[in-house]
View 1: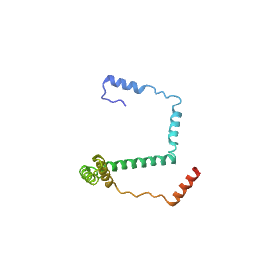
View 2 (view 1 turned 180 degrees about the vertical axis):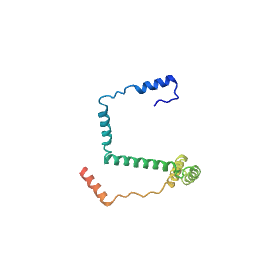
View 3 (view 1 turned 90 degrees about the vertical axis):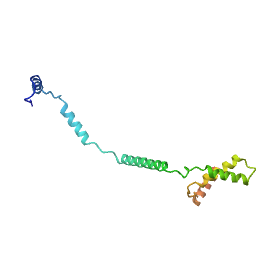
View 4 (view 1 turned 90 degrees about the horizontal axis):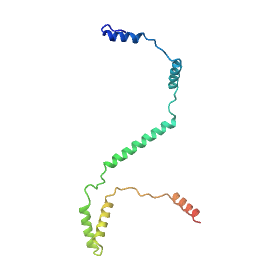
Length: 142
């Protein structure tokens, strides 16, 4: 592959490199064939690892979604509750003059915070669950 437009010194180097003998190590062919066969015969990961990877991906997706939703939720607290809390504290203090102003303000803040809570279902254990817990208590404390 000597190019005709090479300078004389580069043409000499090109000819020297092309005419040198190529020495192949003795065990190269078996090593290459063994490496290729190993790569071709490699088993894919087991079913458990695929399941574990899918479960981890689902968990990360759920965490990411919940954090995103949490960051976008203001729980109606951005407006603040100071004005309505002060009004409620004043009314509580009018109704109960013996109550210190600090305690009236605390009660007003608690009322305002409770009024802004999101509704959630109340947990009520089943009758079987109550019977089982009573039986366990009797076993522990005879």
